[in-house]
Length: 403
Image 1 (cartoon, rainbow, N blue to C red):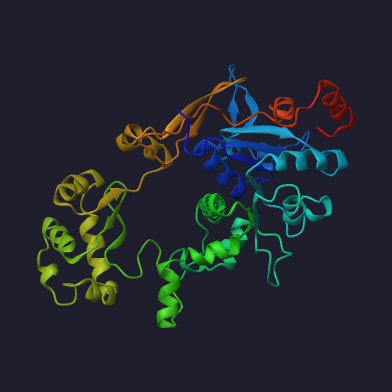
Image 2 (cartoon, helix red, strand yellow; image 1 turned 180 degrees about the horizontal axis):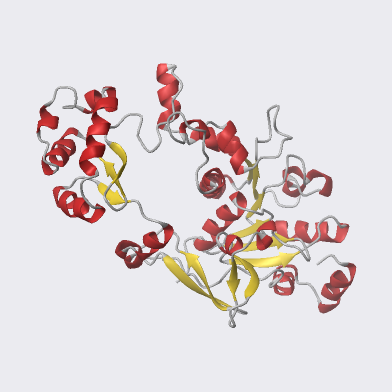
């Protein structure tokens, strides 16, 4: 069955993670995504390993796990757009596309005539989405932006880590991923607006802006109080107890969101008196007195295994869960029931693994029919289909090194 974005064509000049994450979302939703890559090299993440997928005889292939994570459902076309012939190919493809996605440095495509102004002339309906570290305006617009750098500059690392410890980044490139999600949303909104106006537009997305925006309640805590948020480890600035605790054999997260849940928890733990203590009876009191309460709870939780706590608390509706490793997360019965692990057919490797999209549709489900492409796998097919290129043209472009 066709996806909800069937008929939408995306020309994807992005690489690494933020842009490819956005275009993978669009591909999952049924858009045709044409991934433009450098001849001979391709997306940088093709070489970001190990690990690499093993072939049929157990030897590492040239397919990196990193590249697999963000490029399913796309067609790979290799074009050297530093050459005039390559620029003309991309202009012709842009004229036939609904969306162009790129994450080059500010002004990086202008010298090739592939910036928004240049391509608007050939396709006024084009939605042109630019992802940069710092955006198209401001004193930092010329700077290169990387996820780690933006987690630092955007405030996230200042609230991540143990109290008194060093600032920490999140264990995945979360600023890149969130930027990709915002890019997907913005593109869909622009497509909807175009259905009314008939006109395309330029979307300016900056990792810096995204990181500040996604500070969420921590940003508002500062704006409301004027006080700098502090690192609390796994604790929550506004809810107690809402953190991890060590058990006999591992760790468990308690996410007690209201006073009734707290009462049920301490009653099950054999300390109902804590729910009646004026210091802890309300969440406001528990936040103010966390330095007293949390050590008491640590001693209590440390007395049983993780499984024992889950067996006690889950039937009572006390939000809790084990701190799983990645293997345990995929082995979890809920992850298996939701089909979170994919196996996709690959023309050289048989199958390659993937992770399912969390977007579930009742009538237009996502079809995982195309594994991340080999470099240049679809170059000739796309040039024939979209540009009507002849065999002679394709041969000439290959001889020139344009494709």
